[in-house]
Length: 485
Image (cartoon, rainbow, N blue to C red; front, side, top):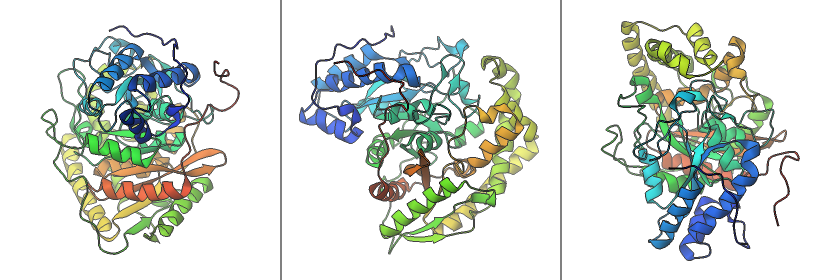
């Protein structure tokens, strides 16, 4: 398949539907207000204008997207009919290289769609392109890849858009796509959502089927247990629609479970624990204000909101996560390191220096430690079915801070600590904007009991209803040329 740059030949359309939510876009296609082809053309025009500045979309699939849109116009419309979405460079799109941002993998052509890609396409959504990420997801938090360079935060070029699904976050925030499909093993959809002013869903372990193989070999234990695919969108309603499309079993993934989309309603007002400074390591005042605003929104919506001192066994969770992950990387590191490109090895090696690999007996012991931490969180969530806290305890940081030196890595890993712990435990979480603080997006997350994504989404929708949405936006400053007439 040839990949083309798009040259606009769009006929005038009175309404800029690229600004609309995915739900509204699909409704417009289903009712005939706009065809799927016209919807795709609008987004391609937006990409041509914005992506040269933001560099979020790495492989633009313009011709294929228009072909797929024409097919959508010929068949009964699905729940995401005509909605363009981006796919992170480590998720397979059939017939397209799954490069992982690495030069040596630039010709790794996918033979089939990854399960979530296939499900979104079956629902009528249109793959419009791959999106940027750190090389192999190992080069750090900032989406800087050896093959495609840096993605820019549309709010401030001096701040990272977050990662590792930062290409999707920036694309959705600027209206290049209504949806992004990324993955999260410690905050990688939630942090870009918080930094770019959009929403994201990190599902429970096993809620969505996935396939993260590179070649025939399956990934190791940590990569099986902690990594989940998840969507980014501009509204919580869109996240719920995608959630309903992606959930369910698949023979490709034996981890995927058949759980109800919606659990049993809880009696009385739902209790929400609020932790503003997990672990007591410090939180920036702007982030604290955002958590407070979200807490007030939930209180106004009828939730029983209570400030708590901390979450269970946070330090134990963080230590076990780092030790297990670094131990899993260690045997393959000599062969992986050369794939990363210049300087991209620092993030992992800084982590290994701080958390040296452990022996097999200690790794097995840590699996038991994880079970005990899960039990403690289960008891906590029995009392508080929902937890509200920061996605990142600092405002968006400078690009590459985590790979600069040990102090930078520590600052970033500490700031994402609630994300790391909830990934370690396999819990669902929804990141949602809580307004602007000092001119930058400030996101919070709502964490729930296993397989209660429905409760997280409902609470996040209540926050969104009261505090509003922030995207799509044009990149800041005078970067963009005026629209063509």
